[in-house]
Amino acid sequence: MVLNVEAEGWWGTRRDRKTTEKIVCSPRATIPHSLDSLSSHCKVCYGSNPKRLISIKMELTITQPDDWHLHLRDGSLLEAVLPHSAKHFGRAIVMPNLKPPITTTAAAVSYRESILKAIPKESNFTPLMTLYLTDMTSREEIKIAKKSGLVYGLKLYPAGATTNSQDGVTDLFGKCFPALEEMVEQDLPLLVHGEVTNPNVDIFDREKVFIETILEPLVQRLPQLKVVMEHITTGDAVKFVESCKEGLVAATVTPQHLVLNRNALFQGGLQPHNYCLPVLKKEIHRQAIVSAVTSGSKRFFLGTDSAPHDRRKKECPCGCAGIYNSLVALSIYAKVFEEAGALDKLEAFTSFNGPDFYGLPGNKLKIKLRKAPWKVPDYLSFPFGDIVPMFAGETLDWEALPI
Image (cartoon, rainbow, N blue to C red; front, side):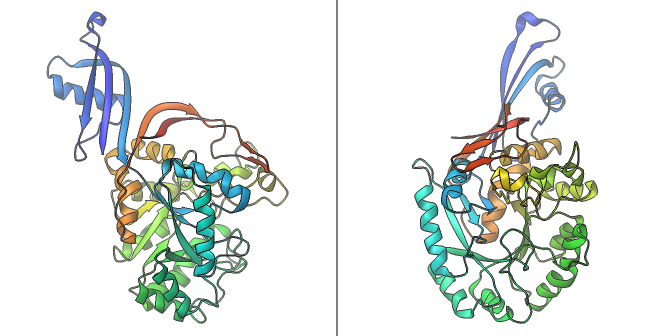
């Protein structure tokens, strides 16, 4: 990672000697992440005659990130949203919860062909396919999936947990166990939507109870099964992931769960475009997740869970769960790491930890993150309707730019 900083200022108090300096920080350097810290940096460089700063421009160059949890849908919706992900990300783990769900390798191959046709010509984007785990998934299908070289995991949706999960798992330790054992043999990860669906469990406790009743027994019974706990939302999930063996259990983290708490659902009235599953949690949980991802731990990596819905399906009496964040994801991640004083750890989270867990090489291309204000569109208009992006109409501090 390279940080270029243009610091405009003058010596002492004399404006007539205004200059611009470029500071290039190596990946192991302490990276200035604010005007104050850059001033300190300059005092070290210029000794007793430090530069006084009047403006600062920052630009990070990092290895192109991947998105390890993405919803692309199909049909006209796929064609509408795919370019936004393809602009920023080299690869993405594509979720299989379509109608009907992607339960076989043959269906995954067909879906992949639809995605490839929709990728902009100038993009190098590569979809990494997944299968939808059901009570009927067989050992043979797991073998076929691995042999295809196109399937990178199986997604566990507890039946009824989220959008298009009605065909999900009802008996993980019974009907699904042979498939799980074969996944260990074939080195295919289990990607988990970690919530119980028991109506007697409070919605804000569904992740915690899932860990206690499903995940902990699962990793005890199949300690060599690779597991990704997707879109974690609680300090309980952070503790669970950190308690497991590194390289076998990891977690993806979304932009929304890093910057929003559950107050964002109700401030200024009900906010349907901040509604997702797992639902936003208390501030103490948000802080725990921020601390985990900005610590430099290899157990956590980028997964947007970007989930597009037509505006009419969000703003209605029974609105769909899902936040469309592909436009703003990298801007938000940069903001979080900057505020934590951890910009030197951003590239590992966005670009290295995920490939390492999946046993894939890092991307060869680079991308720039420039600290410059830009306004998020109020909505994105398509022939089928509108999509409202995360932070619609707001101004963000960081902008992602392909190289």
